[in-house]
Every structure is written in C-alpha cells, then in structure tokens.
Image 1: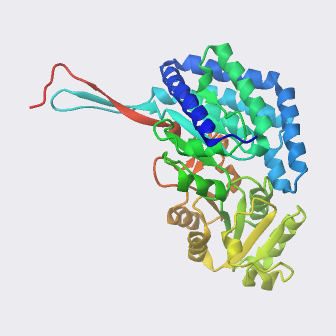
Image 2: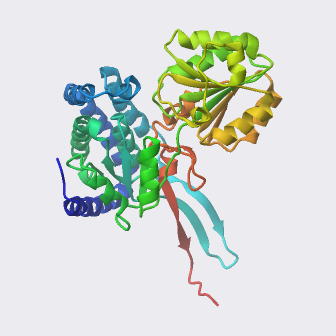
Image 3: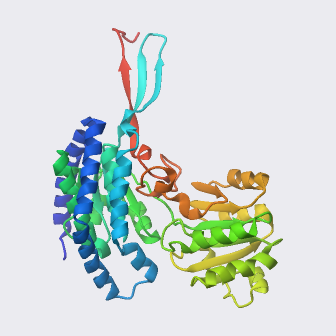
Length: 423
C-alpha cells in the first residue's frame, strides 16, 4: 500500500504529539502503575498468542514466496515459546528497579543551595527495526517502564506480526488505565513513514535503528533527530595460545551457531598460531557438522587446505548466516590489531586460561562489550540482567553496549533554596 509522503508526515505529527502527552503522563505515574501496565500487556500477549502466531504465519508465507535466507526466516519466525518469552520479558522488566527513582548526585553549595541530579525519561523514542517481531515488544516494555513513549516502525516482512503484538500491548495498557498513545505503530508498511520519523525534529527526541548496515547507514545519514545506533555486529572470538581446547570448541560452536542471524553471533575466528595446527581442524570439523561454511586466510588454509580462501572483504562482512571467517594470528597484539582493523566495536571474546592475557585483551580494545571465556551471544541485554534491550549501542555518546532501562533515561536538576539571590 502506497502512502503519500504528506499523509505519512501528517500521521507522524499526530502520533508524536499524542506520544508526547503520553510520555508526560507515564513519567508522572507511580512505578506500581507502570508495572501494572507491563503485567497487563504480558497477560494480553499470552491470551492472544494464537492470533499472534496466525499473523506471523501470514508474514512467513509471504516471505517464503520470495528467496530469502534461512537465517532471516529464523529472525522473522515466532513460536509458542518465543511468544511466551516476549510475555515473560515484560513481566521481568516489571520486576526490575524503577529507573526514574534514582538520585544520581546530591550536593549542597556554600550558599546553601541544595542541588540534585535525578533520572528522567528521554521523552518520545522512534524505533526503526527490521525482521524480528519480538523487538517491538521489548522496546515497548523498556520505554513504558522508563516513562518514555515509543513509535515503532518494524520491517515490512513482519507487518502482520507487529500489528498483532501491538494490539495485545494496547489492550494491556487500556486494562491498566495507562495511555495507549505510549506505544504506536504506523498503519502501513510504506517507507514514507520512515522518512517522516527521520525528519521529525522537535517531535521525536531520539531515533534508535536496529537492523542491518543499510538501515543504520540510512538513518545516520538522513536523520534530523539524534540517533542512538549500533554499527554492524562484526564480532570476533580469539582463541589464545593458553585456551582450554574443550572450552574453545564449546564456546565457538555456541558463539557462531546458536543463532547465526543475531548481532552477537561471532563472524570471525582468530586463532593463535601456536595452537592452530592441532586445534583448528577440530574447530572446523565441529562447525562443519553443524552446517557452517568458511572463508579462511592463507595461514589457516595451510592447516585446513579444503577451506575456501577469504578475501579482504570477507573480514569486513557481518555474515548473519552460517559462515565464519578464519584467520591465524601471532599472539594477542596481532589479534587486537586485526579486530581494530576489521571490527565494528560491538562484541569481542578471548578464550584463554591466562588471566594476564585476558586482562590485556579486555583493556586493549574499545569495543562496547569484551568477554573472557564466554560466548559472544551473551551480549544480549536480557543476559546482562536488563530484562530486555532496545538495541546495542556502539557509539561513544550516551550509551554503549545493551541499551536497557537506565540507558533510556537522561537527567535533570532539582534545586532547593531558602531565599538565595545571586550577587
């Protein structure tokens, strides 16, 4: 369905104005009321699970008529377990501490003025995401708890799924007496809604894109609204010379193959030359049995000659599929140099029993998340105890890593005096 840009802009203006009022109302609600809204929304997701799965089946049928990848289809697909996980995520967020109840600093000046820095909502969030329908539920929950309103524009592939999820969340908001305008979605898939959101300076306070490189690049280049973005999830696992071989095999299999289409999936294996001749064939065999393909540098191919040769571009590629780039490196400095040259500062991991080497790796990189002896797929906000996440930020301003409740707040100052005037 084609929507004229003027119509999309008119819708956005009305939606954002209502969202602004809803955000103010949410910020004034006590924590118990915001938690009730989340729990009512979770209950509605469970009640309407069948309708959500039917809507998702429509999206999957349309997608299957094309020629998409299995990894993308996995991101799009919902199951009863995934719907329950969405609902449980809302319940979990309701149980987290109130991000708006925080006093960040409190001091008294020599003239007697008391100054407090307190947490406050950002206001109206614009969320532009691609295929994963659960992203809308996670974003709505985090925004509701933190006193923000959100306008969600999901990918066209998940349009019916997003609509069914939104309907359930709206029902929960009504049941709790919370403002329905706190969570809104455009009425159609037309891209003019994206353009309207990107140009909504003064209406939307922050845009958060969550998707592939082309989406993030477009948002960053066209937005007239502040953007909280992540670069590609070009994550690395470095198997150090002092790695436990069994641990390395287990961690790499999980980091690459648990879900290949998520941004925390390892895309490049770096393995130390001291252990590569014995360990690399086992790692390759483990992943080949799970259906993984490879792109290997010359040194890796001297050990495993059947592996396809990697190009320079392969080491800059976020595969989001069952493909792994492989390079052999000489020690920790070479591993970090490779990551700096090819990575996106998202998530990196080192596998080693040498604590000194691990600390050098963790201190030596600037990535948003750096791990020691853990799968890169743990970079997800739910695994950090955030309940969920609205994205993973790789920029240097405001937030880095998983963006949860705390990262969806800013701050303001409350100043108390007893008649002071400025000399």
